[in-house]
Image 1 (tube, helix red, strand yellow):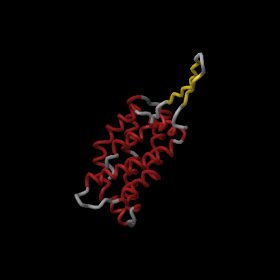
Image 2: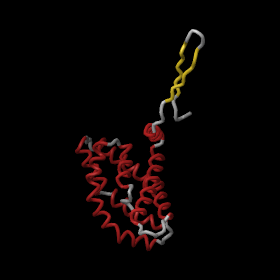
Image 3: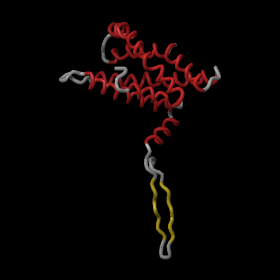
Image 4: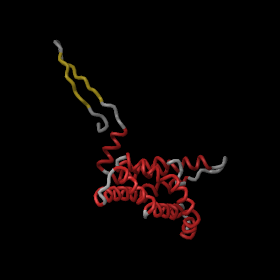
Length: 197
């Protein structure tokens, strides 16, 4: 089987030989890292979609008044957005800023983490990612473009203000200690309890 490594060990005795099979325990992290190494874009996209969906479920459970119906359309939209839009874009964004700071700017350590954070938070990425989220989610829920534009106008600035109170520090830690292949996961895990919802 793909998930288990079998090692045959032969034991010889006077009367016969017995085969003993030792099975290595399945490690979800090892399996995930193997898949991530083979298909980083696909794995990050699926992971992002799953965590966006789970985050939306938790956000609804926490914020809904007792008796309010659960909005599965919203959860579906968040999952689709995470899988097909945010996941791929974030994959390329994080790889780009890693390449840019390492290869073009020749930075390392804390200086590299600080420059990555500034690029991530205060140039194109954070404003664009939030505009895209605020505009796309209503469309995926079946609303019109007028509603989506109004959603961006009403919510972008308050979201960016809260974002900039939390994310610069998170991203400095993330960019300092986490390999680039897992930086998206760290950001998703920090936000999965409904930061986007």
